[in-house]
Image 1 (cartoon, helix red, strand yellow):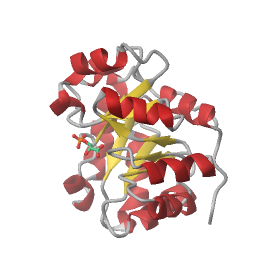
Image 2 (image 1 turned 30 degrees about the vertical axis):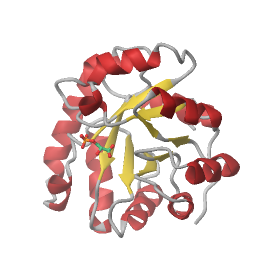
Image 3 (image 1 turned 45 degrees about the vertical axis):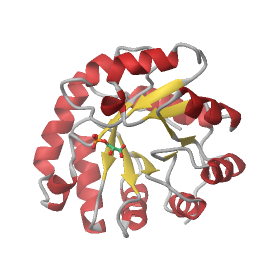
Image 4 (image 1 turned 180 degrees about the vertical axis):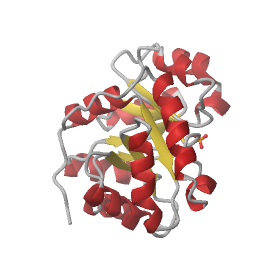
Length: 223
Ligand code: 3PG
């Protein structure tokens, strides 16, 4: 079930095109495909499946095999073992809330696009030591939001960011307007209780609103 990873540049181009990465927490793998279709029907062709629930790898695998047009990655990957599980489930990228050097080394060795969370200049420099230049800014709003991100981005001119944490329909457009932001992550269009409550129409409608905020229907970009 292992999948070859697309190039890091191709993945970055795809993230630049999708602009919004739904951050998904899913308990029941049976909800995975209806959820993926709801996001896709709403114009969001991407999802980060967080490895916070025991059956997340199975949910991710269901999406990558049954809804292959959705650009799917794994989130909250805290160990190399989880990274290997994500790879086996068909993840096209891996995200984490922080920078675990063992996960970074595993992903670099395996050629897996890895976007670790950073919140300080020292975090950014640790990421640069690992050759990582596309970073999740987390938790974005509690850390100080866009003004903090602009300040932290200024010295590191080759670094791009994916802010996540507290982003929603009312502030996403301002983050996306900052040129150093590739895409924004967030759970607001598909919170865990909507998924477990099977409110897929509601998720589709909120995804559609998010799509409009990000500038309209996301172009399909092959990886
Ligand atoms: C994450 O894991 O990236 C965040 O928990 C998502 O943050 P949000 O729920 O505030 O969007």
